[in-house]
Amino acid sequence: GAGVSQSPRYKVTKRGQDVALRCDPISGHVSLYWYRQALGQGPEFLTYFNYEAQQDKSGLPNDRFSAERPEGSISTLTIQRTEQRDSAMYRCASSLGGNQPQHFGDGTRLSIL
Amino acid sequence: DAKTTQPNSMESNEEEPVHLPCNHSTISGTDYIHWYRQLPSQGPEYVIHGLTSNVNNRMASLAIAEDRKSSTLILHRATLRDAAVYYCILRDVGGELTGANNLFFGTGTRLTVIP
Image (cartoon, rainbow over all chains, first blue to last red; front, side, top):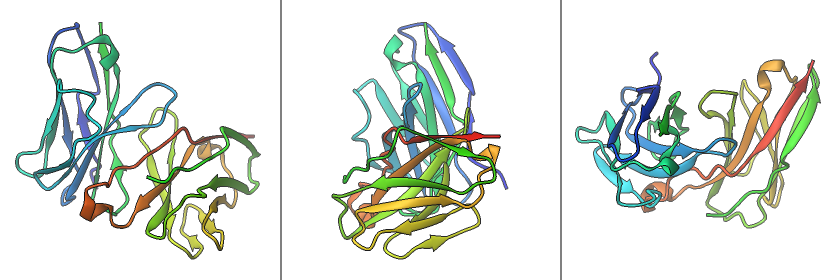
């Protein structure tokens, strides 16, 4: 079946622009997670949803970062006024429930010029 | 969250067994031990998890020490496709209720498989 789908695969934008990254989870998966991964490092947690409710946003680095999942399925991670330090691979994962294995997408590589 | 300690890197010959260690001396009674791996240029992939008893699945086996302060992921016959970074992660079984449900990946063990 279809896995977690993320778009775009690559995003290059100028500093100061806003970007929106999309995640389409596996159908029926209740939980959805966003991570950020720097080169050579493991993924770092950003935020997590159960259905449409944002359960934990403790990993969002500052208020330029926000996420939503309005209908409990597709999620969007938005970064406002991007900075070069925001450049990274952004990964989305979904799971059947909170304690179930997480299934990861291929990520969006974001480059801020 | 309780943390884990893994060697930075390991090597194995192809078709030989691989034992990947993980220390988690501060594990709590409600922490599950999860293993994920990340192949080059791919997202992390779930491998296996357990609480107290040893676990087997089609990918690997998980051996958990009696005191639960350490565990070992066992790949019974390494192939070139097993070359990846392996992450040992603790997840609180109550995390779904408290909202503390993310995975803390750390830096993992980079496994190199030699043909």
